[in-house]
Length: 124
Image 1 (tube, rainbow, N blue to C red):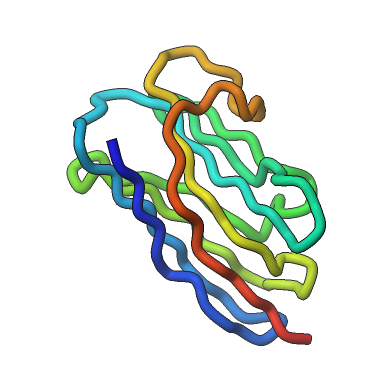
Image 2 (cartoon, rainbow, N blue to C red):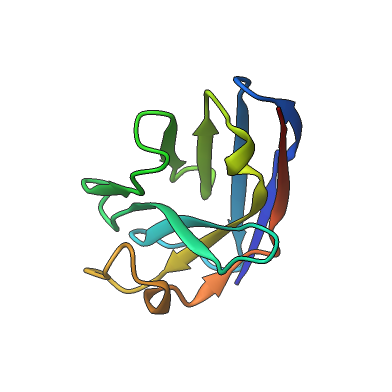
């Protein structure tokens, strides 16, 4: 199983980016997905999770109302739309997949597969 993130880059504060995470190697009919991020000198933190049936989402307070997670099962791709970006959103963003149902969305240990990360830099 491979996860490949794309869409990162440099953007000014207040701008938008959309990250993509393409999943290959196995087709998951139902799986939980999440985005995490890690800023320099900080631990990796949960950003948002989407439940295995797509009927539950959980956002970190810091991104609520600005970020939106979505998925296209036909393309086996997960997206993260990021609006109103702030300098504190600067980090490497990782997507993750939990192939088991009923996983805990915010729990990092729930996710078996991880991408290599994509850098997002927000200039103030």
